Amino acid sequence: MAEPTETQDISAMSFEDALAELEEIVTALESGSGKLEESISAYERGARLKAHCEARLKAAQQRVEKITLGADGTVSAEPMDDA
Image 1 (cartoon, rainbow, N blue to C red):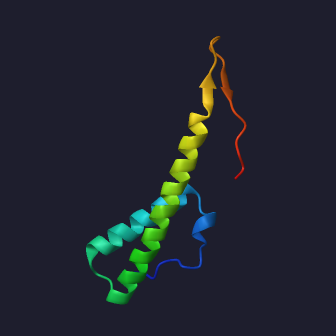
Image 2 (image 1 turned 30 degrees about the vertical axis):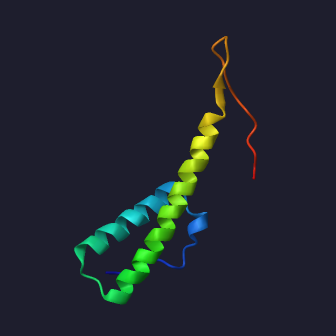
């Protein structure tokens, strides 16, 4: 199993990139072919990637929930908080 890409900052990753890397880690861990320390490092990075993906999904859900449909059928969105 290859060493996880620890140099790439997870917080800067897109949802899609983080999910793709997480899937690679899961596949590698499921194969059971890696060394123990590499597997532990990969698992730790996978946990951080999972948390990042969940946060990105929650933020997207909140954005979608702010979109409203007016009585006349027009779609409007409330201003987003940049918090």
